[in-house]
Image (cartoon, rainbow, N blue to C red; front, side):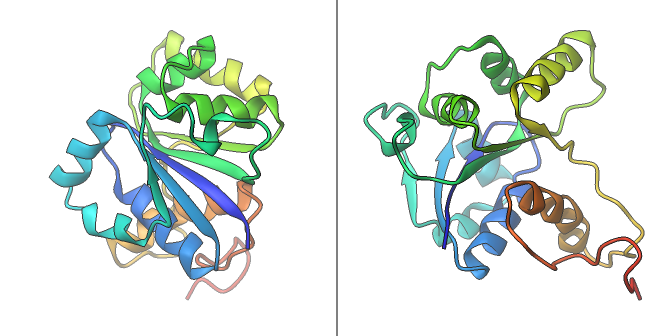
Length: 185
């Protein structure tokens, strides 16, 4: 069992985070969650709040005494989904003014898995430059761009095409979505 942090920011698409949490828990992992203030409102608006009852703990955004703020803490990695451009920009600039971006910064400096799932579109040059900067630093950028070759039948099936990719890049083996070339019937 590994320990992961799931960060949720104020961008729309909190279903990605709730599905990731569900799959991590079903696969037997420990999960700590950090919400930005705006994320709490978006989670309520998008009716995803119940899913976060599965979290092992909710970390407070301004608690810099949390384990997640320290490089000596033993968590395997982190995903921020959805990742707002504001959070992505702070992280690209080294601004760690809350626990969510500090925990992500810890992942970068300690060479742990960090997956960012932006849900913004269209993107302008600053967004793209920030993503490139973070990619060069070791983060994995996985846009919330679901695929359709598995013929998803529900919104959850569609969301899981992105979540499966996030799990893979966190180093979590899964079979929630068939890989390309396997049976997609």
